[in-house]
Image (cartoon, rainbow, N blue to C red; front, side, top):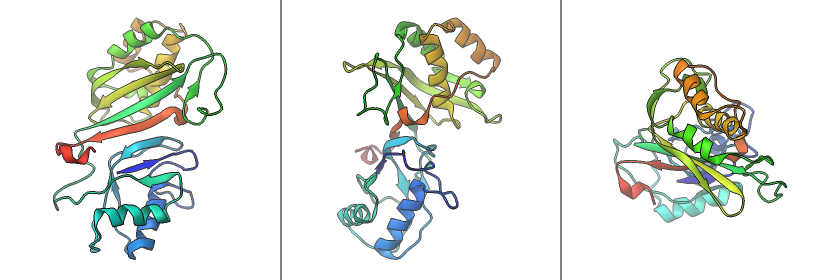
Length: 240
């Protein structure tokens, strides 16, 4: 289980000549045990996106204890990436086959920017109609074709189990969404569309109609407000 701040990285997946989370993890593995295993992961986060509980998996011939893996990898990793937990799993387990994935998007909705939150929230100084945003978010729940929210044009049907907003006392507005899986840019596009509803540039009913017609809905919200919160598996022991 890996946590990271995505600010300095071009996403999770390895890219030639660019800093990525996967490249840092694989280099740390090599330095720790001398192996270069194929690293699998549960969710491919984009450039600038953060994670609280990203799940990765690899096969190894090295017989370290979980605590040795955690301490050893963290020794070699940069300070913006950390291994939080480690598990041994059966040979048939595939980290990519999760039951669901949970994302959160943080909006800072107040008149002045917070220097401490600027890398972890999307600052919107204008008032938002959260009730109307919540009404629009209801239309995301269930199984739908989400082509409106992604540049991907094939196999765009997903099942969203829950989507809605939670207000925090420090002017943060948290959008929480849980689905079986997500399309590229889907969460950020949904947030961008919901913000337009909150700014009264469209009604919740218009949001629903555009989604049903497959019209592009956005704009895409910036990545620094987005967090991969959790990946869920049938085996509950993997969630701690």
